[in-house]
Image (cartoon, rainbow, N blue to C red; front, side, top):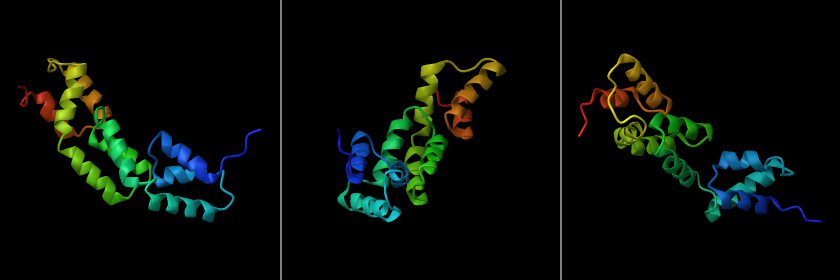
Length: 148
């Protein structure tokens, strides 16, 4: 039979697949740890060794989701992972500068033409709003003032 992997081996296995936040890794490993202190010590060691980084995790999520989502949606996802508020603000500020460009690319891929009726406008507005783009960005995009 196989020997049970150690807590550290499980943690490194999770981290080898993708980045995790400290809270997410804590939640995943909690059922395998005998004591809460053992788990906290392990997470501290992994952070010191550079295997676990909330900043790297936040950048990974932002990069992965930026092609399809707006700032609000990405920020909400980062908040669900219990990251530091200043880190979330920093990621949001970085993404804010390119939000109109990203919204335009997503909108152009799906629709391509400005809405001619109020029904089309509402449909396109909902499409962009569900992806987390700000109302001002949506209005700017659908007003056509930034068309090339």
